Structures are given as C-alpha cells and as structure tokens.
Length: 220
Image 1 (spheres, helix red, strand yellow):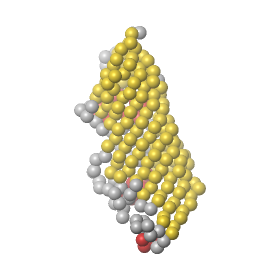
Image 2 (image 1 turned 180 degrees about the vertical axis):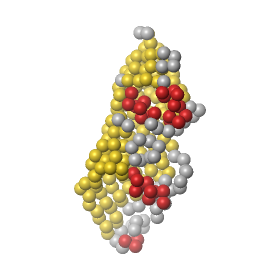
Image 3 (image 1 turned 60 degrees about the horizontal axis):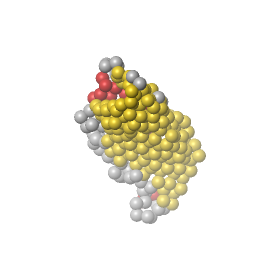
Image 4 (image 1 turned 180 degrees about the horizontal axis):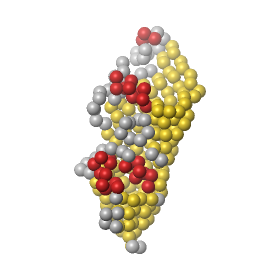
C-alpha cells in the first residue's frame, strides 16, 4: 500500500515539535484499511505545535510550524504557518493525496526582507548551478514569495519539480562583480529548477528610472 521511500519520508519528516489535540476515528474492518471502496473510515487529526518539518532533503526545513494535520484514508494533509530559512511563511499547505502513488506537494506564501529570500535560495538546489551569481547579488527591502514543489516518493531517483516567485516591492539590489546598485526595485522574479529570471524589473539607478532584466540558468 505504501512504497518504502514514503515510509522513510514519514519517519524522517517530523524533525522536532509536538503533536497536540490528537484524536482518531476508525470504523470498519481493519483488514480492509485504507477503505478504498467506501467500506470503512480511518481519520486521525492533530495539531502541529512549534514543529520542524523537513519536506525535502534538498531544501531547508520548515520551522516553528503550527497548524492542523490530518490522516484520512490513504493520504495526509497539513497546513499552517512558520518560517523557511528565516523567511516568514504566512500560509503553507502540503500533503500526499494517496500513499499508493505517493506524490508530495508543498505550496507556501510568505513575505520577508529580500536578503532572507536570497539566503533561502543559497541553501536550495538552485545554488548548485548558480552559486557564483547568487553569491554576488546583495538585496534588501520588502518582498513577497511563493513556493511550489512536487516531490515523487514512490521510487527513489524520480525527479520532481520546484518553482516559485519573488515580488520585489521597493528593494535595493547590488551586483558586486560589476559594482552596480539599483534602488526602488519593483517587479517579479521567477525561480525554479535550474535557475531564475526577472525580465522587467522597474528600478532607479543614479536617480534615473529604468528597466532591469536578470537571468541565470539554461532553463530560463
């Protein structure tokens, strides 16, 4: 019913924290679990309290996570708020709809200083191919972020995908290699497997308005 990789993920994902207010309902013959043919019910609910959850071995863990978690039939779901490498996450949802297929999805939305978002990307798989670029960019100022990940667990080595956006809202950017600095940077950057791109950022340079494009990685 459940691939070995999924069992390993469930064993390792909850790094620390507490499960509180737990309760369960089981109705039917347990020999028929997970009751795929409407012949019973299994449901267990609880709340995560100040939890650290490692959704992916390649990304930083979600920390200080609080919110409800449910195991229903042959899957699970969790939602809540927390932090990701210091980035404040206002809303996160994750789950595996079916343990038989075992595809983990994670989506998140948050806001933070752009410097913390850069720190998150430097701790992610994007840094493997874009380390020099990310190391030479400095950023600070307000920004919103989204995160969307699909992680197949049914077989080791099956690639997933990650993507997201960063919305700069008056930030300051500096490229250290070329000693370029831009103020009041506004606009969207997209990131994902293999790189990132920001095609039309509105900026000010030496007091003059302009448009800035950034790109790194073959996929972008």
